[in-house]
Image (cartoon, rainbow, N blue to C red; front, top):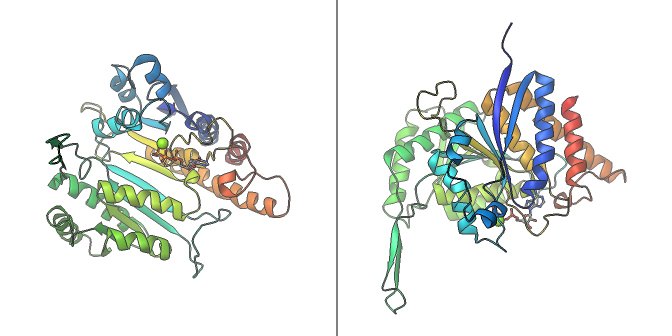
Length: 376
Ligand code: ATP
Ligand code: MG
């Protein structure tokens, strides 16, 4: 008898709406597991949250790494409660530590306009918006190298360095080319600023051009980050795979999902594609899946957060674990519920769409509808 496929998932709901969108998302994943015949073992942890910090004076327990490395993947809600803990403490003490320690050098965000969701952009040609941003996630402008001198005087000077390593740039650029090669449009857009940033950005351009030689089937274009942002707004349907450094990727990977209606539906994966789950003789670095949105303190506790970003992040996790059919079914369920919900709303029926999608629905109502659709 074939052994049952089984995966251990570290569940870190975090703060604010993270605590609200996690339960329906876990039910959706369980529904997919039941339908496609595999098992998910969820290990929930209260740390990586401001609540934990206020009780323990730190964001993580000393043995956090062992807990997470015992799992196949990490499913992360959202962290942050700026009213009680400054964001730089809560973020650096959790998600940014995970990205670094597990060398999750790819931050991947699909941006798709799903029928049923209204985009803030006029899409004049009626073409679908469907692109992916690939952000370098470990070095670049987020180096933490630098310092301050002459503090408190007129000569006060602050410096922070940008670090591009050959390895760091090449691996993210190559990942983006590989992704572009597998997609129908086979197009890669590189974000740069080599007209103003005169040392690191020309190097980035050089590596993109060099690696591009290995991918003659992929069309390559590059834009300076400022005009690229304008193009995202004016013609988002023309992009396919967009790659950027840590800072430029950060900007684009929030702008991208915003072009597709609401940040509430957007997912994100922090990947270490070199880590091999099957071979744990080397130190194992799990990947992490989370919604794009933060803890949204302004709507926390109201039960109206959109659960789709969390569910879609779970869909990416299933795909990463190799459960392609289950991942496909979760995506179809999200699409089908959104399309039906829009229809029902327009006909004056029950409104499942949450307020960020211009509806009156709830986290629970929308999450349960998707769960039911996955069960089939
Ligand atoms: P981060 O913690 O990633 O820096 P942030 O604190 O800047 O993010 P968010 O917490 O994502 O921002 O909130 C930004 C805005 O989007 C808020 O007005 C929030 O209510 C809204 N928002 C975020 N996520 C959702 C969601 N799932 N459903 C509905 N609205 C959301
Ligand atoms: Mg926040």
